[in-house]
View 1: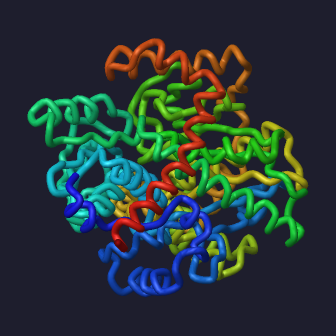
View 2: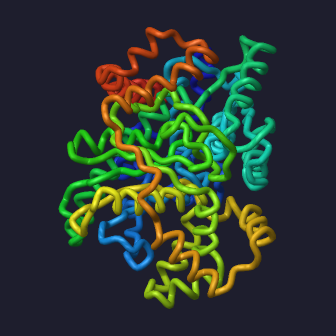
Length: 470
């Protein structure tokens, strides 16, 4: 990239500034906060990539126990306040930022290809186009129409590949095809093996949860420790937050989750499902499986029924009847998508299986929001009939209060090695990694080196800014 081009590049915050937005230059921060509502396509919105609001308060909710039926505290970060409506934009920005400051990509030349099942691709279209890149998103044709619409609205191009959420090989194959057509121009930014994704969640999401653990303890919630981090896995970026929590709270369990319809880690399973954004039928390169403590699985239909409960008017009436505050009911109707409900169900399952009490706190994530699934909810109503108060009560009792402790697999050393070994089939046989590279990912030092690059990237970005000012 030439110096002239570098000076015109638009970049945003460091990892540290994403974690602590109060450290951003106040003039820039105020401009960004204003643009978040008034001009969401303004690149200044890069500075809104954070888990905190204008008052530097974390976006979270403590899930009411009347909803979950368990004594343990389930605390949920929600991502709908990020610039694209999903925290996945944090991963796309971080990957882009790291490559730009290292001179690996040039918006005046390269076309970026974003293999995705939805939110990552949306984030790639938003972040890539804000930096001036030609951005192409590849995702399965059965993803919600809202996903395709947002990619277009953000300035990206979408290519639909055959299948549903779990048809990731087809996405990889299309990305390879595009690369082969123009190898010098095309750059594939694969969320499944780009460690900027891992670093965003390890450092920004993980340390946000460390801060939140102390914050809620001062409010009388929990014992001041994180008992578990529960996350469904698509790219397996988000679950990296558990690596940071376990460093601070060594007894914290990292619990991964996937659909019963596609239990890849639990039983080498396969199949189609509709928890969009997770369960991609392979173990990703950036997934530190040797640090995992358990896997759980939930049903995709139940996850969608849970979203119906939280978003429909009869469902809201039922939630009011059981004692949820009206303000919480309205908030929950906005901040959950299908995978967020799946995360909630998995957290309930983990709390029951591990006999957690009111002293325990489990953290999980709501990736996006209900607005991305209106077409899915309409299809649910056409398939299963309209929601009424009786059905809402049944769904609450069966799907949430009735969560069972089946489909749980604890991570013994032998099981962890099995999880790790599944990487071979995607990454060595299909994607060109070597066995030696694969073996390295079993070693703790490999992951320590990835974490250390947070500081390196921040320093490079600071140097970049100085050159621009010069």
